[in-house]
Length: 99
Image (cartoon, rainbow, N blue to C red; front, side, top):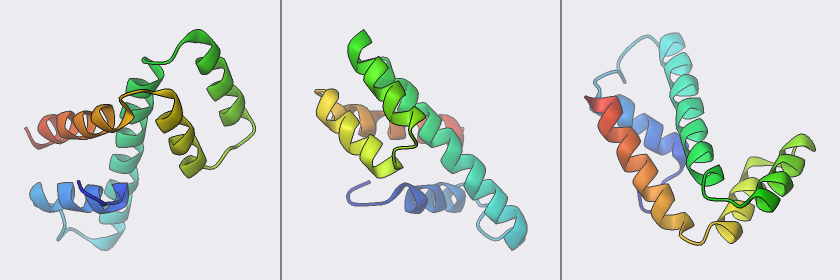
């Protein structure tokens, strides 16, 4: 997933699953659902690695509507092995989705 956005990653998953040729309206819905599921999985994995104080700080950031890219940057600073967890989570998601 080198330098690939999550949206591009989702498109690749849909291609691999053979779903990229479905009706455009269905494809838009599939993309949105898959992107949401991936983001939820990434969030859960990262939050599990935070201490209580960091979790509270993250909750505050989410409560005030902090932009997703800023949340990702914050997590990268507070999860020591962020890149490894991010890549592994995406790989695990791909494996389960393509089964």
